[in-house]
Image (tube, rainbow, N blue to C red; front, top):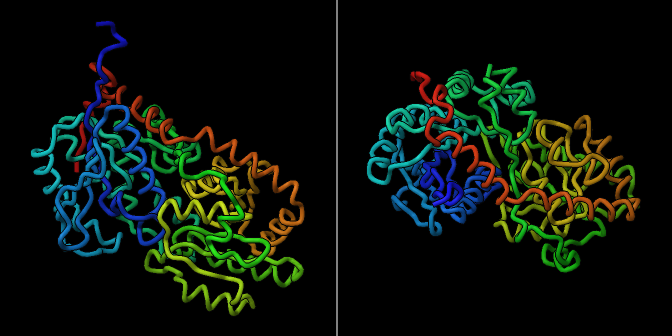
Length: 427
């Protein structure tokens, strides 16, 4: 057998997502782009012959211990604390219980070639269980506490000290840190002292079979668009994401340009202790004088979300902080330009002036000017639509999975990164 015909050294991966089930629909609670990432990568890895066991905490009674999501992908619910929803910032008290459940489950369902953990809570457990299983561990943070604190100072409660400490420990212990853009790579080095050689940049993908341009007129009819122009905000309804800014942008537009027939569709559910739910946003819409111009939808399944994005003239992403901003990529795959804050990974997810516009601030007046400038020039908007769809073609989940598999293989090949794997890790 030739070397190139040898089977890949990675066959089975344990994936940890303690605080949010990979099967949960994104857009509400603690579910978002991370959930889409985990589920999509597992699907593509299965196509490459790699099985994934996705471990999460049982957050309601009666959940089956094991669910076969598709061939090669299983979801495993582990008991750790009450079988009920627990606020994310309180879950650190149940990590030891999750670790014990995971150790026993791994003995039953393993062995695994490596562990890939998502978010710091999972990383805290992965660094210990990887020692028990004698396998490398890869970690993806998705959000960083120190970055979030800097972005939301005075707006939301700061992330607790135990999260920051946990992130530092995970950063020091992981055999590889997978980040979506060079922005997060620099943040890990500058804020957490990460070793640059252990960081891998692997960009997220988009489901190019689901998120497509399609028939805009039919999509507008399906979502009940009533105005000539439709703006969309899609994401969790919390201050960090800026749904209130989206409503204020519409208010500014109506005051400055009453000739523009425009409405806003807000898609998502409340998330976090300071969440701004539909009720609070509806009250804000009344204060802005646009109560009849703002409509709300609960978090949508991916097929329905694609239809919403396809119907939109523009997607608004007025976030204070984003590690990447997957919704921006999904919108562009539908041929919808994006107006977003120039923060974090959004500067890599959007081509400023080509597939959308990146804003230096979150001032609703400035955003209203930018939005009106696009709506007033349909040819420019049409060119952006074409550029957005072309840009998205280079971001498939198959490419993400292939790159990740390369990271995995580098760690498990005999003799690979031996020094890194022999690092002493302590709780």
